Length: 286
Image (cartoon, rainbow, N blue to C red; front, side, top):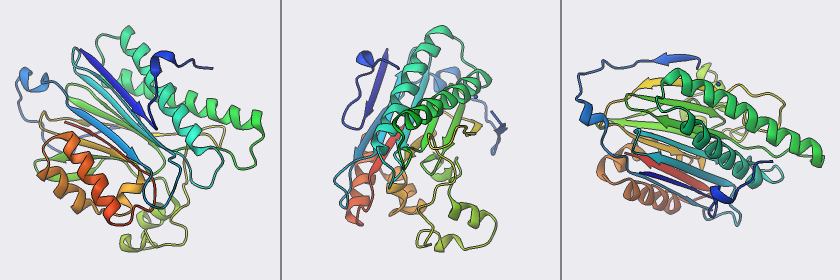
């Protein structure tokens, strides 16, 4: 059984015509698990909201679930604010990624992390070329661009790929961990110890993204492979969510709400109650 969904409003993959890892991270000891634990069906839900301060929505999300071979791909693309047609760039990214994944998956019954790593790097490079060439053809004074953050979940691994500041989180045993790094000027300043993390959101350059899809001819996404436990729960989100909610607040909601739909609905509502200054997108995978 397979299920796929994607959205700004709703992307129809069947009617869409199209015009790779760095290292493996093991941050915990793998415990013996039964085969059945890893073969339980996935439960996935995603949603996006324009927020309270903007009339347009440049966030797109998509996912494809295949419970026959126990795989899920989920992705979020956030059009770069202030650039022309950010919504178009994010929509193109999600459409192309999911279309390519469906074709790739059909050809590869047995998926291993290295194979998925190669797919992701190739697909993201092609998406970047697609958006970059469109910018050149249309002579956009402010090239359209988008973040792109992807999570591919296999039986015993999760592979993350990202360019920009959309994130992947993992909840394991009631402890939340961010699996991706933000590609922003401010995040780099925090990593170098130049500014404190608490000052990042209010920094005058907080909006500057250091890596994205489309504006430049080449992109080098971060691709990381992690071990996965059967009870892990994952969240992919755009920065409109973590602009208002701290990691501790996200953690508390993911612990309290068991169902992915309830998780996403609660996260978005909590973000709106705190101001909703940006578009919001979230995909939860359980």
